Image 1 (cartoon, rainbow, N blue to C red):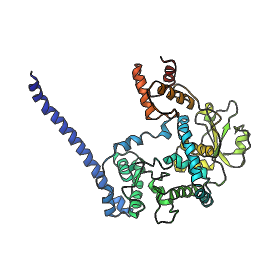
Image 2: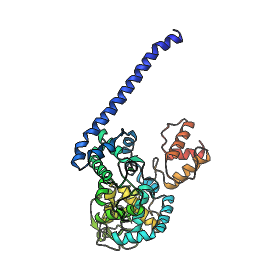
Image 3: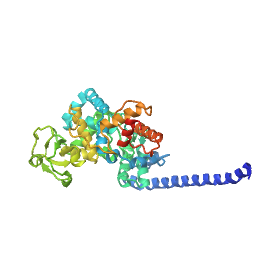
Image 4: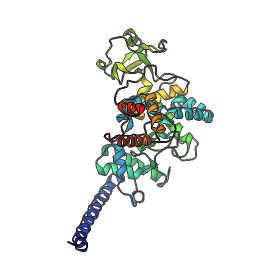
Length: 403
């Protein structure tokens, strides 16, 4: 068969396939729009006007990136040691100290008003948006509608959407500027809409609770929220502890509360050898890697941080970053390492070796981000290895030997 004849046969088939794809995409778009319109009764019942609803959803489409991000939350899927090292990086620590200095007068007033340690406020600021430099660029209305209409975390997203529409209607922020994370968390300190509606503060008295562009409003809102979350002024979030020989932390529930004095009687003491300053305080034992990694006694303020984000790893990162901002050191007990869990120094070495081979650029920081993952993939391809980008100890050894 001649080329011209082949083309005549396949061109209609290709055209049909394109029509099918277009029809499928249109069907998905129609389904999304039908879902959006089904949200109106709940919005109306919540006090949202039709004008606000229509303005908010004009031109809004499904956002597939929201679904991707909803299934990958680093505080839940990353090894906790890697998550903590990334969260409490040297760069974040350096910037945090500068933020403490730059905002000293404001933090003085916030500490006096809300009773929350300034280092904790700044640590949350750093964790949530890298001090306002990464507050999220997704339209909050679109993100929440996507979650609802895809059935992903829709129970969470429904009340958040109504609150977001009411925030928009009140005029605290414009639709164009109402951006945040995939889950609708907003501003410098990432308040979800219901938390914003209940606890955000107009600290500077300009009539708007602007957590997007106003640092005083954002940090004051965080102090306000922690205060109502039963934050105890002057108390620690917890302590790194040393377990007695033969003690199996897995046999103790993380929900078990005992006084610090009782834990000490059981042989669980602070790693620095200091006494517990408030021995009657109730604490829970948190040992995420069992007896092979750091262990902690977590106090009331740790549980207050969990109201901000329910992941233990997040609360631990905030507590540790706040301690480091005060001048404290790294955890005494190192995180365990194995084939799939590299230490911070090992991850830095891996990056240095990848840089030396011309597979990536920059300075090694131990943070396994997109550039490192892509460099590992390139190395794996060059060696005929399975390509997954995962930085294992075997990859590190191979890089060391050049094999």
